[in-house]
Image 1 (cartoon, one colour):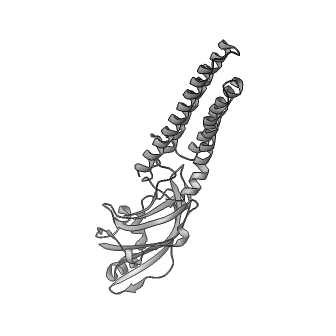
Image 2 (spheres, rainbow, N blue to C red):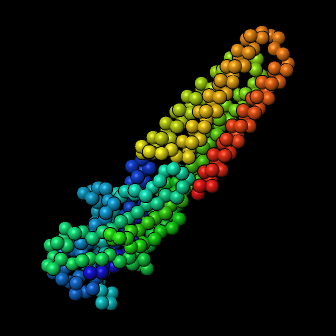
Length: 297
């Protein structure tokens, strides 16, 4: 029994990256051949009870109510419902978070338990009515803008997919700018004269603690993941850079301590060349990671 489904999304909000949940409110339209629809209504069965939102996480706290009596569209009757609930998307991949597109879904399936109450039990097939579906401009979320949407059939029912594009500048300022400033301080610290050993040795531990706290704040916005994100890769490389410079500063401090005040000029030039190489290698490493991240999109 074909049941045509149209969805009009009015608002999307409350996206939680940690739980992969979000709130959606809108209007659901169901239409079926008039004799079939009247049979259901006379039997006391609301057509909406024959389907269910498969990815709804708190159905007991959701809203689903009829907003008008059935109306005729040619040989079919249509009934509309206002819905509001919390949904879950398993398609979200955080490897490129927060710069990759964000896919959110509304998944509808026939409800077999209610169908079994009808005699004979109908075999309901949900058909998407994309012509009468749509998404309001209020569906934009904080930090994201709606890129596109589509309503399509699946093996078990139908699905509306909302693809959101992140506001890249906002994500850069929030997550990458602090990391870039912190590591710039780390790289520039090698420009201090090697005679300032105590000052140079004090910088890497502070940078290391700062990196730990920043990464912890970033990871708290995400669920437990079995893989590393692209920003995790930048943090891992930053730890390595900080450790290498710390070891180099220790080596320079020991060398100066053994030489006293008579550090040969040639040795000083070698230290400067070594630190310049480490700076360039660090910048090249960051550039490689960023190019790899851009190429993977």
